[in-house]
Each structure stands twice: as structure tokens, then as C-alpha cells.
Amino acid sequence: MTSLLEVEGLVKHFVAARSVFGRPTAHVKAVDGVSFTVEAGKTLALVGESGCGKSTVSRLVLRLIEPDAGTVRFEGRDLGALNANELRAFRRDAQIIFQDPYASLNPRMTVSQILSEPLALHDLVPAARRRERVDELLRLGGVGRRYPHEFSGGQRQRIAIARALAVEPKLIICDEPVSALDVSIRSQILNLLRDLQDRLGLAYIFVSHDLAVVKHIADRVAVMNLGGIVETAAADALFAAPRHPYSRALLSAIPVPKPQAKRSRIVLEGEMPSALHPPSGCRFHTRCPYVIARCRTEVPPLLADGSGHATACHRTAELPASEAIVPADGDFSPMLEKLVAAFSGGTEGAGRAGVDLSGTPPSNRG
Ligand SMILES: Nc1ncnc2c1ncn2[C@@H]1O[C@H](COP(=O)(O)OP(=O)(O)O)[C@@H](O)[C@H]1O
Ligand code: SF4
Ligand SMILES: [Mg+2]
Image 1 (cartoon, helix red, strand yellow):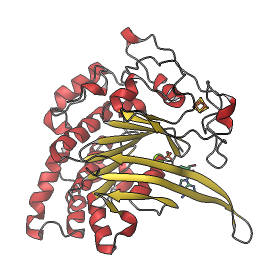
Image 2 (tube, protein in one colour; image 1 turned 45 degrees about the vertical axis):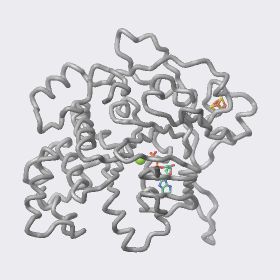
Image 3 (cartoon, helix red, strand yellow; image 1 turned 90 degrees about the vertical axis):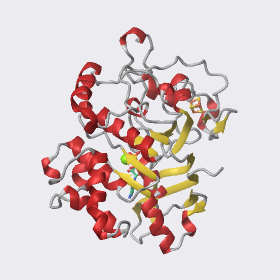
Image 4 (cartoon, helix red, strand yellow; image 1 turned 180 degrees about the vertical axis):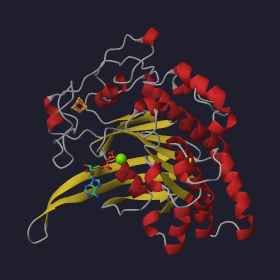
């Protein structure tokens, strides 16, 4: 069976400097050979530090920018080979929501106008039925009519989500959708996204620098470092036993609940190298606690085992097994969250797929 989205060998280098004659003299290797798949109705989380190339991958997948190399196939069809009509249809099927709902909503439009705009643009619903459709979207997003400035950050992100849903997409790229929100609001938005996924069969690419957020929502996780994927696995497998030294370090930085707080934190030495001058060989070698000579010269390929858990490290087989990681909710206060959820009822999106705030790993997701 073909996956909803198949990304293969994506490369994007940006010109960072030019000579006086306009010839490129330096490139940022933002994305350097990225491959992954996303299944219909599932969530792939793309995780890594700021600047590792997550947003560039998102823009490449949506074909907002052209890749230097590689292919993106949606429902089996190469996006690079679509004609104008087919590309228009794809632009309906794949939507994006951003970190900053303040910037992405027109302050002079009411929420109803914001939601009817894409309906008119794509000529999806006859004019007479649009109001009905907008009411349905307002209900799905748990927001009323009025202007965006009358809403809080969390409510505005709901409006952005409702607007993305207006055109009935199959895939939504969520680029750091909760990073700008108060921690008390984050799990409400994550609940809403999961609830909508269950009800509408949506697929997500969930982009985040924060693994603690990702554990709530991901079916699969791909960990990125400096333009490449270093590890990808089912979310429960990755949280139970991360293999790549970089994933281990990222996961070790997530706070654990008190009874399990025995895990030691791996502190990475040194700065993250620049994508302008990425290290030779393994791009993690300047910060890796397990580095050997070979790592400095040979690029480790991303190799999968029988279960589909893939790691790009020369020493995968010989490294000691990592401790199981059961992250808590960072600075979430579980009691406060439960209280908020109890008071906010259905409109807050805490439906049957509600996030469990007791710190259970995502393997328990139904
Ligand atoms: N349009 C651009 N021109 C030049 N460099 C860019 C451009 N867009 C992104 N970059 C660079 O590419 C790298 C990856 O950026 P980005 O994809 O935004 O990372 P992330 O979303 O993971 O923070 C960064 O070094 C960034 O500075
Ligand atoms: S290949 Fe070498 S430097 Fe890279 S992660 Fe593995 S052990 Fe570390
Ligand atoms: Mg980004």
C-alpha cells in the first residue's frame, strides 16, 4: 500500500553569500538528504534543535519552495510532475498551521470571514451553504464569531486550525503549533488536534523542538540534526529506548516524574555547529560522547532494523542500552491541567482522545 506522503532524498541548500560578480560563495545546507513517509490518519513528529531544517522540510513538502534534489509523492503522485490544476488540488489537500497565530490571522476580518475565505477561494461549498459550513467549523474549533484580537493565543490557534480544516485537507503540517502558547493552554490544543485527527482521519507532520510535547501526539518520530534525520522509529519504541546518541541527549533533557527520577541527564558539550560549515563525517561528532576516529571522516547511513527503527550511527550495535525514558510534562502542572480540563468541557477539545497528563508514554494511545 502506498503511504499518503513519501519523501525521498530531499536536498535544499540556500545561498548564504555571493561574490561581487553574483556567484554563490557559501551555502547553508538546510536540508541534506531527508527521507520519510507519513501514513494516512497518522502523525509523524519531526524533532530537533532550532535551525536543524524542520521548517525547510515543511516548506519543501508543501512545495512552497523547490528542492535542489529529491522527490515528494502525495498519494503516489510526484508533486514535481503535477500540472497547475493538480497542484491547486494538492494545495487543498495539504495545509499548514504556524507557531504564531497572531501573525497568520487578518485582524480586520471576523472569524466567520476568515473561515469562509478558503471556502470561496477553492469553490468548495455553494455560497448558500457556506454559513452552515462555517458554523460547523466554529463548533469543531470550539470558537465563536467575533474578531481575532478578542481571543486569547490558544483560541487564535484554534481559529487557525479551523481555517486549515475549512478545505477538508488530508494532511496538516503543524509547525511548532504550541511553542508560543502558555503551558496551561498547550495540552488543550494538543487534545484538540488529536480529537480532530480521530474524527476526521487527518494525517499530521508535527514539527517541534520539544520532545515532551511530541510524546502526546506522535505515532512515529524522526529526529533531525543539522539537515539530516539521525533516528526514526515508532514513538513508543523511541521513547522506550532511543538509540542515537543525539536522541538520547534530547530525551534525557525531558524532566521525569518524581518516582522515576533516577535517570541521568546527558549534557552536550559545545555549541551546535553551523549549517554553513557542518562537521565532516557524522555531523554530530563534535558533540558526541561516543565519538571515535571513523566518525570524523565517514558519514553514517540511516539503517533500519527489522522493526523499522532506523539509526544513523557507526556505533549503534555496540553502545550500551539506554534507560527507558518516561517523560513527565515538563513545566505542566498535572493538577492545574486537570482542573482546567474539568472546567472547560467540550469546547476545549478534551474529547475521548484526551491527553493523559499523568506522564504515561504514548504507547498507551488507543
Ligand atoms: N530562505 C533562507 N535563506 C537562507 N538560509 C535559510 C533560509 N531559510 C532557512 N535558512 C537556514 O536554514 C537552516 C534551517 O532553517 P529552518 O528550516 O528554519 O530550521 P528549523 O525550522 O529547524 O529551526 C538554518 O540555518 C536557517 O538559517
Ligand atoms: S557516528 Fe560516531 S559521532 Fe556520530 S553519533 Fe555515532 S558514535 Fe557519535
Ligand atoms: Mg522552524
